[in-house]
Amino acid sequence: MFWIAFGDVHESTGMIERIPDLEQAEGIIVSGDLTNRGGEPQIRRIWAELTRRNPRVLAQIGNMDTQAVHDFLVDRNANLHLNVVDLFPGLVGRRIGAFGVGFSTPTPFGTPSEVSDRQIDAWIRETHAKARDYDELVAVIHTPPLDTRADRLTSGGHVGSAAVRAFLEETQPALCISGHIHESEGEDRIGRTKVINPGMLAQGGYVVVEPDNGGVTGTLRQV
Image (cartoon, rainbow, N blue to C red; front, side, top):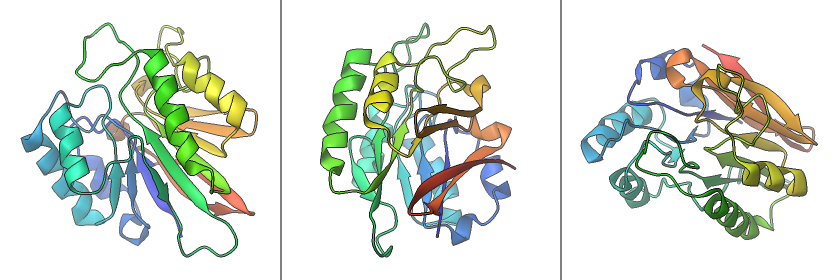
């Protein structure tokens, strides 16, 4: 009983074939950036590659995706952005949910789906409020929390979200899966919250999400 999560596909789908046990997973979670400023033709191709390995996909747009990608996901009941999903509905005794916030805070590159950190904060709190009935939560937030191993550029600068960090400090979900900063693959902790950025899919990083000791855990793995 597990999910496989990754992000920052950027239209490079070859690594999907190399992730083990993808067919046996409950489903696939994509944290954002499926395309490179792409629209429906690009997401259709990526969707076909994903669903060929596993028919259950939950995904959300990152800053490099367009409204057309978001609409495609909504039409297929696969959109995680601003939604909450029961990850293991057959689990007895506790409910484990995932909620998503896509897009990103502003970048120097003027990408299609950027919003202010204030908007990210509002979205996180709005969506978290829908998840009050869950015992444990996985926060899938494309923009990583500020000042962690998940948001550090090669230069050493930190470019994550202050709002995401403040939310994690305050609410302490079990797990936060982020992305966006390709070179910052790794793990960190904010209190009890384990933060994982698996990096760009083409580099082979992914996360196994599974129930563990009454809660939920994420394990960073490499193809």
